[in-house]
Image 1: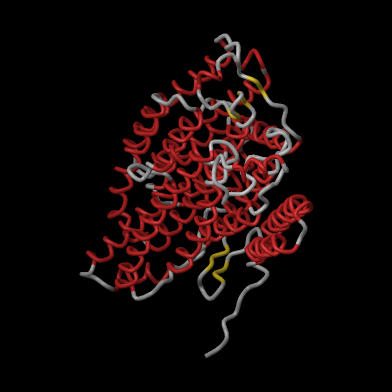
Image 2: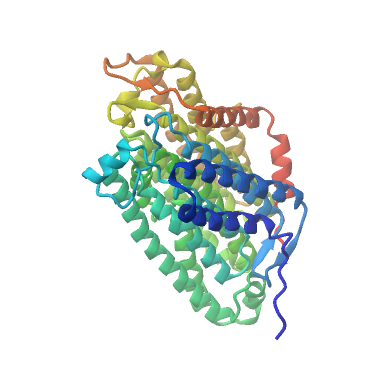
Length: 508
């Protein structure tokens, strides 16, 4: 047997991120505690920047490497680059220490009992939980591998590498520890169930095709006639696992609880990056491996897309917590992406890539703004606390309003161009009814976005709040970049649209 050949140059971005994550674990063991935070932040940022440069240098590459397990092509490189950009900004939010009086958003020790004397001592000593950074690197590595996976086994490995660190990160909030730990437990249990269902579906597909590779599965669709039952069962079960990750209805129940309970910096990181990775994997799986079955899986995705858009938009109207409202907003946006996925062509792929990039940037910025609105208990996430924010801090309120208008799809924002692109792709793919539902859901969603804007600018602030914390350079730069990109991509979307169109072809 010949030794497998690995394409180290083409796989360099993944190797860089995973290698830095391993080094980060060693830093936890050997570097003195007083130096760990600085060393971990520097290592994480350097690794992510190096990987981003490598992605740029690989532009235009098309090959299937790692013995057929990893695809290096336009969609994979586009999504990996976007994930890295968002991850770099997220690390800045993780490193924010001014908002908590010298600490950060994470508990000094996740293993300490909430409210215990041990925890109070650690807080007084200013301890920081620097394990966050290697965990984030492992999650980013899994997210980069997920949309590039070209066989079933690598797809499952990437799913778990991406998910397991996130389960831990969700339970590390400095404030409201019990709510944070509850969110982590719910995410872990439901994620474990969805992974098991996904793995069960993989077994069915392998039993049908006798191979793990996407291209060979596609070829087997025409060879194994008369065995469609086991294949369709496998496709359906695998779809459940992926739809759980994107927060689509009816697999969305974890989303509002986890978004609310997790540290807000982690919530933004998850909301922006996990959707990119999961939709990238979903598009590759359904277009490359199951493209010959599109008449069978399209009706399923039609139903899921309609339910996701309507449930996300309608239930968001009833929310009184800003993080839960943004969670249901993210559910509705998953439905909008699914409308384009149903079209199953290269223009749909380009529209999805553009939408995911613009949505990720706006989402990260919106959650960063949430971290700055405070009361005596920390972040003021109840909507009533946001009344009069425009009078206390006009610039911050205007920035948040810009992100909300982008979510609503208002012209001159990136959200408008994103929705226009996915709806156009759906129309071209013969999914006009889906577009009609999407427009209705967008109109409903616009109501609760505008409600928050009205609350901020046309209501009097309560005597006890809101107060706006002054962020460090980390958070200020992240929010500024997010707002600038949201506005710029709404006014001049051409370059990113062209890049998405060039990156829309899958290698097979």
